[in-house]
Length: 293
Ligand code: PPS
Image (cartoon, rainbow, N blue to C red; front, top):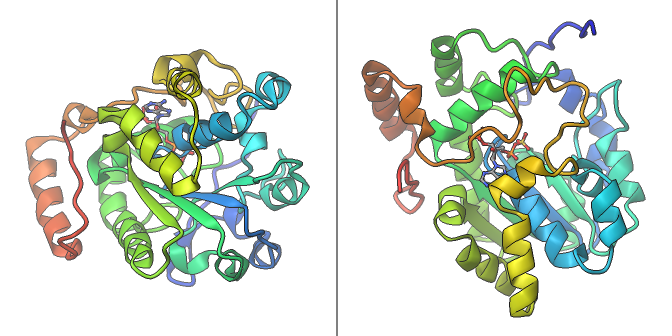
């Protein structure tokens, strides 16, 4: 099937964006949050889908099994700012969510979050992933998803990543901006993809403690197993196989799910240049990432 041309990036209040995430801007900014909403915020490719599914299983795994089996995760956890011709607007899906709490996904940098979330004191779960694996995952996603801008080759993409020429802007600003917000907004739980890979059970416990949930041992086991990489890859409701703009023959959405795949992509020279640039940009010593386990 013929795909429409790829969108192009433009500067939007200091952040690179495409029309698919700015077209519905005024409505998004007017979004009415609720105190029990849970916002899942990430830079793209940091583990959004994984944490969304964990939350969905924790809240609705037992109460709404039919929804789990028939409604794709991206409709159960709408993507607030998405606005494309081929699917309903994320903001409208979020407005229409029948669940309590509502689980809502966003990739917006912290300064773009609709103010109602702060006013309502909603809970926010932020997930961050080390920059190298994040960049690799974003590259493959760009290749397989026709609503992403043209990626160019890996080397071009990596330079663009370092220069913040990515949809949703700079990884460095995104993870740091949200980290700093955590210092003043107690209802923000900051998670790391690498921690989840290392010990998902421990991270689910921490998440539950933030949310005030106390699942039984069997429930927790069901959540941990249901949300593991292999199960999510097989599950048509979580693997994005129903989304037309994605070509999984180019690269599956559930691609590798590992820490350290960057080593299969970065040349020695790219790695050195990246590290040097990283040191210049990442000044906050309290925010540390692991690039291998
Ligand atoms: S998106 O498009 O921004 O919502 O993508 P996102 O879900 O944030 O990130 C996709 C990457 O997360 C990996 N993933 C997982 N890893 C481990 N375990 C589980 N359960 C899991 N679910 C998703 C997915 O494979 C993408 O990473 P890469 O490195 O490309 O494999």
